[in-house]
Length: 187
Image 1 (tube, rainbow, N blue to C red):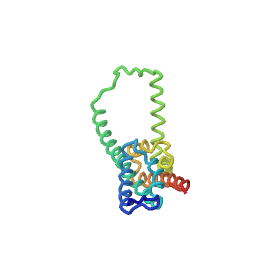
Image 2 (cartoon, helix red, strand yellow):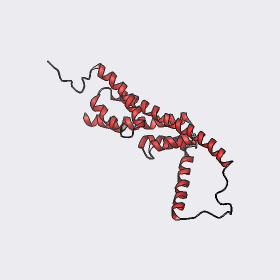
Image 3 (tube, rainbow, N blue to C red):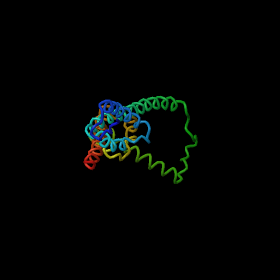
Image 4 (cartoon, helix red, strand yellow):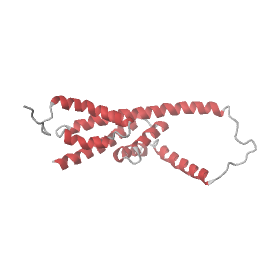
């Protein structure tokens, strides 16, 4: 006869595969946006009511491994870009040899304003206190998007250890908080 498994009677093999799956899901969600880590965190207390916190820890670890790889890719890409740009600037002549100013249409002005604002936001990542705070708040709230902050931190080379530490803390608090609220609501 087949017994139905209650929510609290999850077999050990499923717990173990769930832990491995949590790491895998976290890693994949860092690379594939439709795989949302928050939705996974919402489901964990319902599927694994006794051990959801371990699943959150491992899912966050997988998620941050993916984000650290984004950081490193942005860091390496920026170094390559800087080398190529230096080579080009030594070869490419000015656009207008007569020295006329470029056209100042409204799109050019908007692009300049956005570039200036983005530059200031990214410069904040290099500050010793505000930089980690921006990473933590982004991991905690998703505002500004953590994917954007990840790449920007890599481009600005704001420090891999600082990024990983404060990003992990922010994401871990967000995922644990989400799962905790669901576990309390589920009883």
